[in-house]
Amino acid sequence: MVLNAASWSKKKSDGLYNLVKDLKNRGCPIHGVGFQSHVTTNFFYDGLNNGAEGIKSNMRRYQNIGVETQITELDVVCDKHNNNCVNGGLTTSAGRQLQGKVFSHLLSLCLSEPNCKAFITWGFTDLISWQPKAKCLPFDDNVNPKPAYWSMLYELNSYQTHHAKSLMAVDNLVETDKLSEVNETVKPDEFFSLDAEADSLKYIY
Image 1 (tube, rainbow, N blue to C red):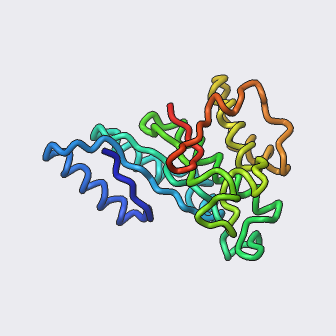
Image 2 (image 1 turned 45 degrees about the vertical axis):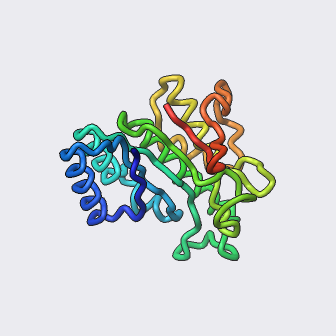
Image 3 (image 1 turned 90 degrees about the vertical axis):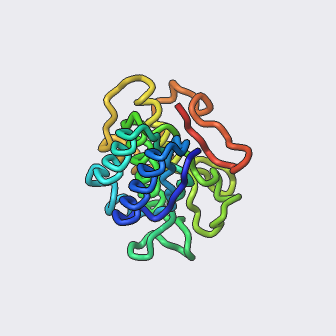
């Protein structure tokens, strides 16, 4: 059984961890916890740019009690406090680039933590989304890849070829709307699969 929870404040994270640990001690078959990730572009500055130590420590304490973690339901909407919202959606080039950084940094984090076993988006195209105006997914309304797709592909290629992953390199690459510089030696479908039930982009290893 995998529990899936949202709103990862420290208070809620601690409460859920204590609940899972207690249930495990009582013999309940809990195998994993999903980190439900409906976030904004400001999450790059609030939670990721400093190394995402809070998320890492949360994943590691679950590993210590034998419970795997997953990044689930990931989508990235614009934040009203910065200037990348247009009619409620992420449509500017700067906004899409920042969105790509959030996707790629979270993927890099999951790849770097042995206890993170799945990386799942909440849909894959803006054409079919629970927030259609938000433009919060890796493919646009015409199912063309956005910077989020290319930056995640860069991370997967780096991981697959055992190159040292550099978030700074991703930040530099994602400055263009289409990353022609991405190493194309690994095909996307070798990593990503479509979750038919949730119409999600899923990476499991």
